[in-house]
Length: 212
Image 1 (cartoon, one colour):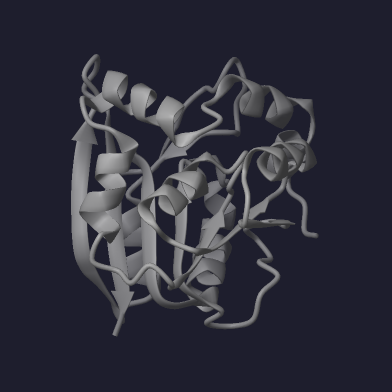
Image 2 (cartoon, rainbow, N blue to C red):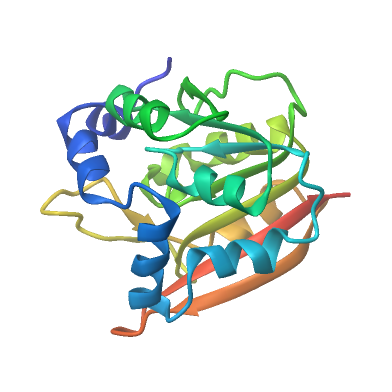
């Protein structure tokens, strides 16, 4: 498994602490999103994915303890897989979910064949990839996606590093949608929407792309 300064940090105690303090299930995640955006993650999922057949194959890159995938399972999606670099997060995911596959792997080297999944998605993961490694991660996501790419990430017109819990070199906001489109012009936007935080001018962006 390819390792970077960031992946080593997330695979160690720093990543364990992240898992422990973040939502463990979709109900807790919905409460968090209500406080941030005055909408729930479940509502966001429905707005972007409700048109899709429930038996499509879905991969989450950076699944942590499985809360996002459990939300999709609650929507009725049945063919769900997550990859995660933190062994601790994987153990928590396997304990708290059923009928979801989890694999220890890095976004830099996704261990599946080309076009293995109908939909590949990230949520708050690209923001933790060093800008120098983003192209490779984007290409890996594109490679294993058969049809759709879906992301929910911090938004900025330009790449800006943000100090994260007293650490540098761990968090960036960026125009991730444009990076995907620049790297792969055959992607078309099916839907995009920005979500402004209630207590600041910061925004997140959700976007759903389709290979054409």
